[in-house]
Length: 224
Image: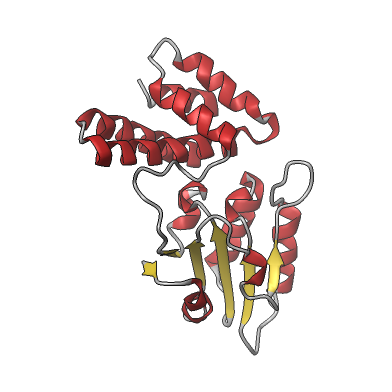
């Protein structure tokens, strides 16, 4: 669902148990629900680890008499273990607890999490011709990946999983999300149906990666 501005976030989030907001690049997440409990990426990997989610589960274990907002900044940075731990807390949501995920790219959040949330985005002035709002290295990998031939796929898949060895799946998901945006915008600009064919393959790849399939195998198999 589209929102007109970020001032609507607090009103919308207070009505549901779990919401994801995709916000324009440059948004200061720390200013949203400023007095609430915030979870942020940390450490050398700049990710959200399972210990952070365990602390959230501890905080929300008791009955809440008033509204409690748990704000996860850069939610796409949750590693797989943290994401799985968070899913467990959604199975029996506590009354008056509201989970708010903030991200610049909701497509890189695991579908198993997105499917449980109310998803919103803030309208901005970005155009179809604008490049994806992705890290430059991810953008470069995505361009190589979507243009790779069958014989080239094993090499580019290896490059993707070795970019950050300790978070190969997250990198692969980020690359496929960037590729999806590239193919979608390319089709809108040029109208070539081959972009839609590639888009469908990328969506299948992203879904397979989100289900904990073998990373390199899925990067190759679904694109052939």
